[in-house]
Length: 178
Image (tube, rainbow, N blue to C red; front, side, top):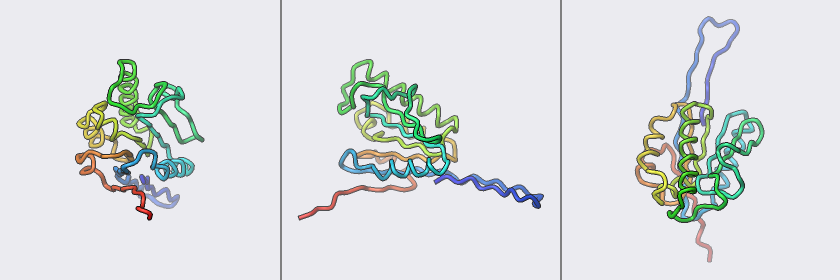
């Protein structure tokens, strides 16, 4: 997690300020909807005063586009694709493709503004695998983001180029029970 370290001692003539570099974390699973620990982490961090953005690229249905985020507390904004349904196929009509494109552009813009310290990109791997968001754009985004921003990516079948950039990779598996 990102930490801003400052020395604000009243008696000190030296001012120390150091920004710890943000991490790229990947949570992957062969099953959808197994990322509750990521959401819990985002809620906990926001509750501690850190600005957090959750972006669900393939979820829709509740009029929660980037212009109408759900705001949880003072520090967590939660946005989804502004669609009446969840995306589960690479075949989108023009309106759906435009909504997804606008969400991706908005996400890139607010991250580059430095508005959030933690950004969760939920099911971004599926959007890349469906060919809806170019992998090269995601790699560029991760490499060029502000240094202090933590990024968490979730989804099945995360592309190898993304895994190669990750500081931490967590694979969520179901145990084989007899």
